[in-house]
Image (cartoon, one colour):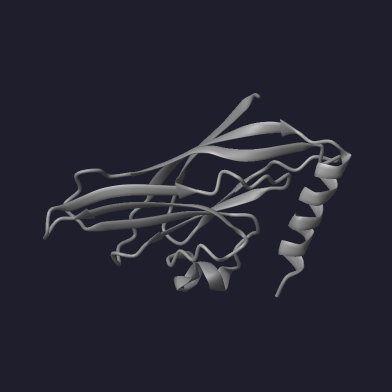
Length: 153
């Protein structure tokens, strides 16, 4: 299957839209790879980036509070999480990515960033999506799931 790639630089407390929707919804996607990297590696400031991929757009209130900095794997609109930590005081440095690669979606997705170290650091992301041709039944299921996620309280 073909792979589509996306990359970007997010500012703290913002989100990017990955435009995937089509008129027919007959193309589905699955996350194959997700990587994150600080915009300023080796900087003398602490960095704790949490980058999340969502099925639905986050509101301004969600971007401003901790909703986009606390991964909750039971949240059915969360598709993946990437964490980059560079703690200068303790020499703690690591990164980790978790993606839910069994999820198939056919609508736009959203990528958010929170720097929970209290700074305003930016972070890079790289995303690979596998394109999947959906038959009518799969198309209907994916579209209904996306509609349910948008209208859920």
